Image (cartoon, rainbow, N blue to C red; front, side):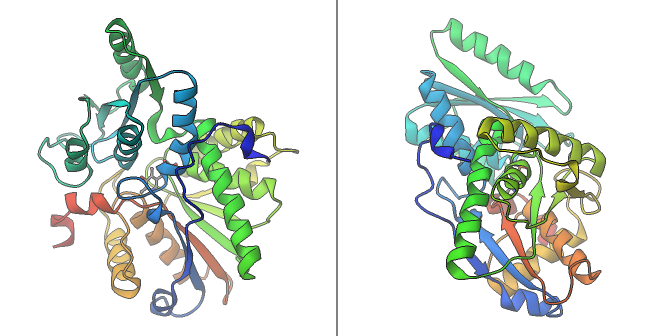
Length: 332
Ligand SMILES: *Cc1c(COP(=O)(O)O)cnc(C)c1O
């Protein structure tokens, strides 16, 4: 798949590192060797996976003549922080619709990403109840801004449409190239699975390079079958857009839903253990909502001998550490 056919802003500045995590692997009993793809180190304010997707989405917005970006997310959305970050760099206005998925969770003075929204200068924020029609809300705002003479462009939640998912097709291609250059063989990959663009893009990129590296998604909300359907649909759309030859099969999309706990963004003991263990063995910060729960999944799968002994397991670190500062009580 040739991704140069799509406009892009070149936000990446080269590949992110793949690091060995020997002390962390040892703390898990030395059964497998964990490696970490450091997408938490991507450029954009405080890093994280949305930069790869926004590289394509914002290029599309600029091609269409936009001067204003509208997007949506949860009250501590990393996606909103990074969309705003790149909008600032591009000189675009940026508006948010924030979904209060957990009742009472929006606090105007909260730390973490919420603090950064204000520091980076969000143009407006509207908070709506959980379950609201987010696309409808964004379209209404777009009409108001058009009437005021603006040229708005809507980026969906998580930038998880086919255009955004191209960023993770590119990430899979990057990983395959890095493995070739270093001679490292990876047996299995574990990725967080949220709005699904990351998981879908990686599946398409791995299939399109015939890398034969199985990918497991760890859900942060939603039951297994629902999430697998969402990821598979987006993967098919993305494969069609990217011009992949051949068909994806549904069994290339696997999700684990045992690590969600009571719900999206709500802390679990296994998330706390994962965040603390990786900090104290490798000095790498996970986040409480996505990468912490995904790593909790990896830890449990290692303990249950899901991966054959001696496997090399690659964890995709999607970032999100600013949200830790909105969860201080959880870690007390
Ligand atoms: C958005 C996000 C994810 C999930 O990626 P999706 O493409 O939405 O599935 C994982 N980790 C972090 C830190 C995120 O912000």
